[in-house]
Image (tube, rainbow, N blue to C red):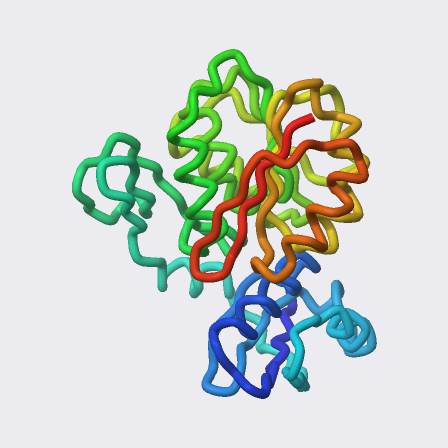
Length: 277
């Protein structure tokens, strides 16, 4: 596989602008990111993205007073997965609740010990949206429930659903790397009741007691009718992956679909919305 790296220059370059553009690009299929002084570098299989497609995609970048430009570079062929995996990530600890870490990392014991090899998939638990959802799910009793992790990335949220005693879990992602990685991480944690599927919202089948979508705001809004169609009456929809400034842009169409707003929470400006059918 031959990779392209897109060097993105953000003006101003800060944590907020970086997080938004990386979330947007992750939803579009970019595999991994590296922060730079003036923005970030984004990596993708060159067959998946042209410069024209990139320019069109960035028109969705909706942060006032931020300018963005990019250049593209073709990378030499090497095993970028292996190089990225060797760099690893720091363990994520929620005291008294869980530890998320690579198998070779030693951590203090917690109630839940979750092993993750994040092989270029989005969502290792480090991001505010993922970490909030991890805590929500692991503090829940999902006994007997059928659950869906939409845009599963590493599969961390699907694993949390299984650990919270869900009866069955379906995990769906549009990215083949993420699908393979989620399956591997389920095996690492001896999780046997998670089915990982390659596809988008059109791949959803059946009805669910709980649907979690931690993806880009525009994708959530576009797929809301599908989520509602597959959500049992009385079921719960948790959505995240967007800033608190975008809450109305998500909640308004959700209410129009007949969902009831239950509550919201936020961390460092990133929101989680809880709806019920």
